[in-house]
Image 1 (cartoon, rainbow, N blue to C red):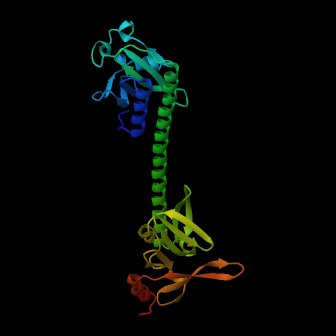
Image 2: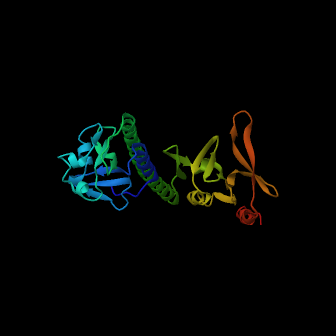
Image 3: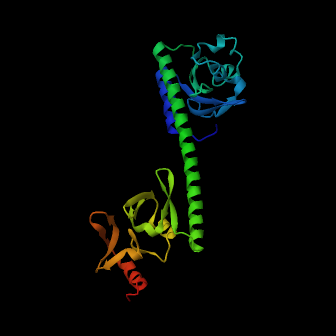
Length: 285
């Protein structure tokens, strides 16, 4: 209730009005006091109505189409202010929005200002559109739940890294936590050879393991022990004790160990803006 308009629901009410050939169509949600319009066409200035005036409150009493061919001639609605005054409802057809557990939470309906009735194809179309509205609502709920779980996981990740940093500062184990496939993994920084940035992701090479995480180089650099790692390029961080040799524009880094061929070596570019700082740290200048 009371959420912002969304194009997916707006498209469905326009489609319902088109199929049913009515000037008004609504997606309404009901609580104890009112019906509120999640989407609407043909009623630009109306956001909600009292529940006791809503045709839709009768629709949600069953799981089938509720249709009123002429509200002026129907004792249940002939004195309704929405019939005797604006918007002058004469025809109403609504299908309940049924959640997967069978709860009716609202309707999708088509409304006209003249008496009429739907044909069989229009009734079936309204039933299908009701299912589509529920599918959109369920997808929206799942997205919100997923975002909440993501926020919780990121909170745990921050707490874990804060704990790891505390352990490091107090002489404990050097480790970081990373998020991989919706799990938190503990990685020993002593095992990390080098780090490589790829767009919005970062590859962490640890021995024969490679972890791909959604992060930035700046964020990851802040988590690694500064006295053991160095940023040598905008795309690379290396562990200092894994540098085998230095060439004019590249480092040769021990990338991992192959049981058959021994250590594998990898050339890593040195960025000009990082080179002097690296040589200084290695006591070469």
